[in-house]
Length: 324
Ligand SMILES: [Zn+2]
Image (tube, rainbow, N blue to C red):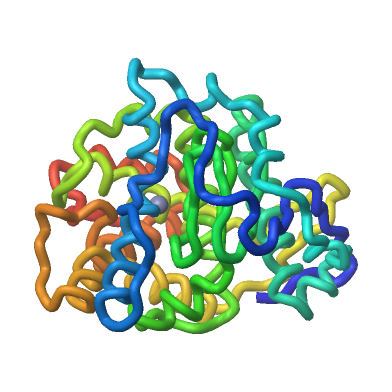
């Protein structure tokens, strides 16, 4: 992946709140991440708990909407002032000004990918679109509109404050650690594009379709696979998406980049995670879909570039992946 050195970056929605940005408890409307209480121990137990937390936290987007009760849509309770409770800005992204900076820094690449996602989905959805409130990076723990998030929680989208939260140590410590996922410059763009996909689902009202939370063909799995499909749609269009000034921000994506995204999607497949952490696979507790399904639906989005093709609710079984 190569960014256009001349393109300007927009840092207005991304910030870093640093270490322990405000502690665990959160003043959201009775909503919390379904994180088991207590500290994280060391050793194997700690690793398994850590992965469990990651899995649970990834579900947060939909668990939270259902926990909200009364069919309250997440956007109707969105309160921008709540964002500021997550703490200040460490200035981590202050030097991210151009595509050249993004070519030289993983932090600035994060800004650039967020910009590309926003530019793409803005054109794709038109008047239905508004950008996510923010991408917040943190270390240790932070408070969010969906409750306290601790270190080692995987990246997640909180529909209440429309914000993507990310502890950037996740990639090395969890994804490339116990999950044995890939390294590579396109791992994080895939993850961000998946989380941004949840924002698109929030805007389109798709999250309210989630009634069943677990199982191989559950609504939860359908929601997650659709977010992978949306990530694929963006990847297909990333190199032709222009910013407000008409500049293309991402000049090229290689087949290697796409393969990296697919490998990352596979590494967070439920069967893969269960095999790595429990030594056995239990389909009935799936929330995100198998490695093969995650690869399959990402590829549907990447090949078709079509929102309609990403209808993961259409097939009776989600492993019945459409030919495109
Ligand atoms: Zn997800």
